[in-house]
Image 1 (cartoon, rainbow, N blue to C red):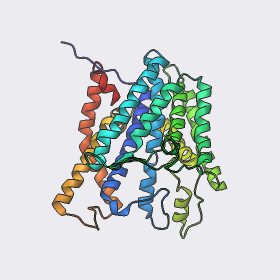
Image 2 (cartoon, helix red, strand yellow):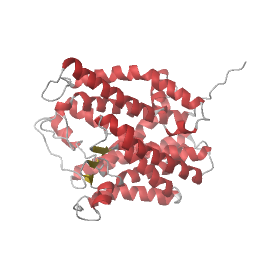
Image 3 (cartoon, rainbow, N blue to C red):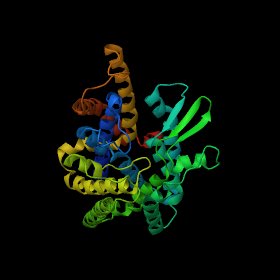
Image 4 (cartoon, rainbow, N blue to C red):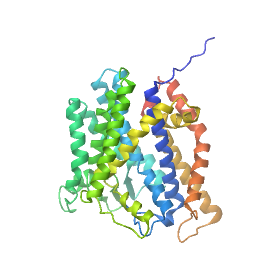
Length: 386
């Protein structure tokens, strides 16, 4: 009897999974905050004068999640094409998986947040944005790579010029514009409303840039050349962020000197996520590209393996942690009752971090099992969509 040995993923792919795993843990931290620190919610951008530094920086850390998820989705789509028959296979896969993610947002994801059936409100959030971005990319992959990259830059850099454009509910453009750029409400019926929490347009730009960066990670690409491009792009994005923030004029609420040095720093980094501004994307993608360099250098180290495993089953973890958090909240309310006003909650951000660490450890075996199943049972077609 012979034992099948699953080959190790290429080093460049391990760094991608490790980055995805890292931002999954940041996402877990943010969702624990939303579940158990409901009495200390934050806006977008945050109110620097009233938000404690530990809460501000915990929330800011989570800003990395959505841009890097979307960018890595585009990057992974290019690598998928390397293993298959090129753009036609990539386009078909992106379209089908995009539809699947939109379906999940309307069903399992929405129910996990609200536990309402039938729902009265559906929040169209990151899974919706990734799904629609994949559908858009299924068409854009046929563009020449330089054109696709230029289009991504144009959308990311230019969409803030549209910030002042709004359409009332009486306009035929209200719904498409609410989906594309203007975060708002869509009245479906007297009993159902949709909230476009993640307007789509800038995310199309981000996924296009991820796909355009794909050749840097191709199997024939030089690791040295890849790192040089990542250094140049990452530092360029961060330098552009600092320059534009100092100019204090484009696509963002102005920053200012606070009552303390910490508040001044908080004000400088207080940027807009809904929809993500040019500065938001520049900061988060710049940091993400530099993290890819570090993770590629460290990827043989044993302590990085759990991140790679988390990153190998992102959709499974997303659904799992949402339902675990919801059940924990309901159990906590049943045992201790409501407190702190109308919500049950923790007293400190430190408790949020501790709970997140414990949950990461507890959920790890299930994620490891599913990641192994996904890698072993490639004959089960639907597994590749999770």
